[in-house]
Length: 145
Image 1 (cartoon, helix red, strand yellow):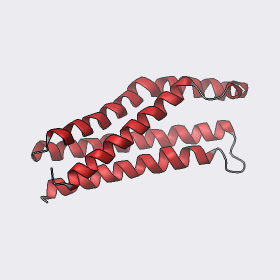
Image 2 (tube, one colour):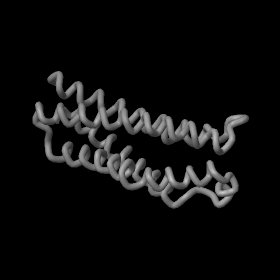
Image 3 (spheres, rainbow, N blue to C red):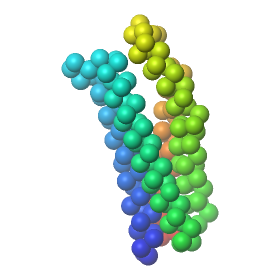
């Protein structure tokens, strides 16, 4: 394994771990913690997901640079492009709707009674797609391209 492949492996698995830990553990559990109100949880979620998405973008850039320097196979490129596309759709297409929804809930807490927004479910679907794509990318990388 050359050092650029090792860098790509590390970046993909760190990215995967961050998404799993934050999206599927921290996010749902924070609202179950004692004393965490919906406005407080939304405020924390905004900060955490903004930081997560920034880290994801950096890790995606690292993987792309490693691929430019190396010679990845077609399957690896496709899986990685799917993960990056899912991230872009989340940040550009879905997060603005989530921000509008959280703004409405923060302005009027009774808005939270209507349950999660459609955009929230769309975001989760793209998280699942991203996790699957990153898992495939990581496994293919471990096969050394």
